[in-house]
Amino acid sequence: MNLNMTFFGQMITFVILIWFTMKFIWPPLNKAIEERQHKIAEGLAAAERSQKDLVQVQERVDAELREARAKANEIIEQAHQRANQIVDQAKTDAVVEATRQKALADAEIAAAATRAREDLRKQVSTLAVSGAEKLLKREIDANAHKALLDDLAAQL
Image: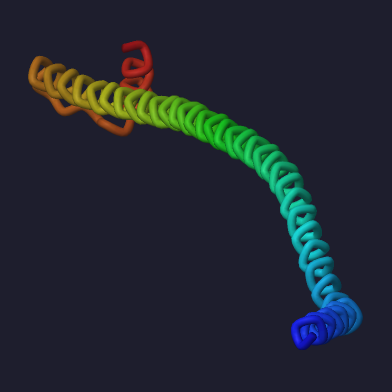
């Protein structure tokens, strides 16, 4: 009999334990498990969204890089064009300056040649007067014949 009573006592204790567990222990455990599952699901969804966002951001970054490279190449090309324009302008300026310098040099040469001709005419007229004076053995009035010598110099 003791065995039967013990058995019923154990059964009643076991039922009370099951009831207590189902009433007070199991709901918080289930709630904690469900919260954990929910957090895991949210984390997986957030990871998936982040993965999609990362792909989109990477595409935008690639597009921006392509645009920046294109713009940089355009700027470099403009710089090359401007450099070529500057070089061409410098060449043109150099040619103009060289032409101007040559014209000045030509004018200076022409002026020097004219001065040399005038000096030569004066020397020739002086030599002619000296020679005529020696030939005639008399003195020639330089003032009286200056007009004649100038005319002679102009003809030379």
